[in-house]
Amino acid sequence: MPRDGAKTKQRIMDAAQAQVLERGFAATSVDAIQEAAGISRGTFFYHFPSKDDLARAVIERYAEEDRGLVNDLMARAESLASDPLQHALIFLGLLEEVFRETGAGEAGCLFASYSYEAGLFDERTDALIIGSIELWRRTLGGKLEAALERHPAKLPDTDPYVLADMAYGVLQGAFIFGRTLSDPSVMVTHVRQFRSFLELLFEVGLPTESTASTVPDALERKSSP
Image 1 (tube, rainbow, N blue to C red):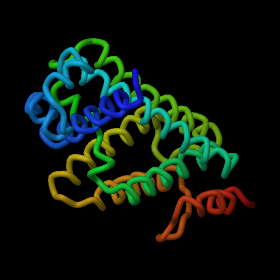
Image 2 (cartoon, rainbow, N blue to C red; image 1 turned 30 degrees about the vertical axis):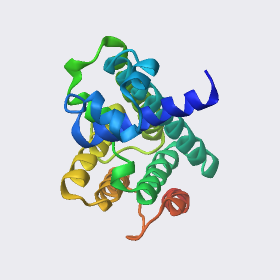
Image 3 (cartoon, rainbow, N blue to C red; image 1 turned 45 degrees about the horizontal axis):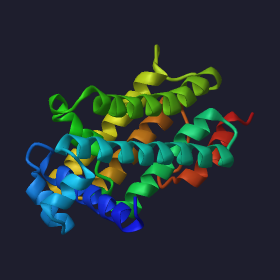
Image 4 (cartoon, helix red, strand yellow; image 1 turned 180 degrees about the vertical axis):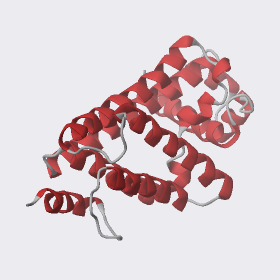
């Protein structure tokens, strides 16, 4: 496709994503997307045969970006520490920084918006959302599973993958609260509170004003004789 065509396609997808986050998929019309993207109806259907094709393309792009973010943040966490519990806590601290920099609007979860209207999409689109959730579960849950082998939790029968699911739920809930209350700080404070919960669960003694960079030192103090 010519370069200008690729740019137009991306502009349509950008407009659609913003509209879906704001209104939901069902309430987002092709006309609204056309107007937001500054294109004609013919141009829209040249790039996307149907609204469903656009929905899939947008979620595919979002899933790829989400996968890249999760993998990048965990790789950064692994480069800063050697303990799996450190990795999990630093990962959440880095995620908190992402939300602080982008704000609730930019951090809005397209998966949540799609999930509210799950019956409107085909199996391929649903599979993309499920795949991203499973990636999160494997990434954070796997680290917490390894952490439990070194750092027994205060609560019996702690399930690392349930903890990972809870963290994902916190993100979705924070998105809803942040958008409803028009308060970008909600995304940050909810992630920080969940990280504090993990610190208590694993008895990590951190200062009140802790940051991701202090987590390795705190854990080293905990493990020292």
